[in-house]
Length: 108
Image 1 (cartoon, one colour):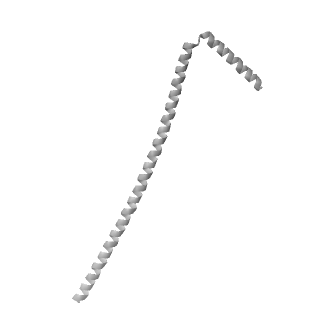
Image 2 (cartoon, helix red, strand yellow):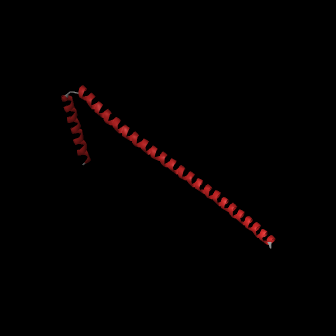
Image 3 (cartoon, one colour):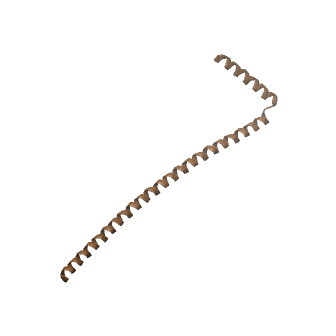
């Protein structure tokens, strides 16, 4: 009878060890899945951040080009004011209006 209990206990020990080993194995597999998922998420976050940075850079470039164009136009206008007299300006506008009217008449 003692021998029978010792055999049962030995069988229970083996079963407990097997259950513990399976639990460890499942835990390691779950840990690996969690790490892989975290790596994928980190990569996606990095890609999203890079894409956002590129968009912001393009937006900044467009804004800078626009501001440059506005400044260049203002400086050109100031330079023309200093170089062209009011009479020359009026002659230029009159000639421009005539050409526009002629062009408009030819289209009709």
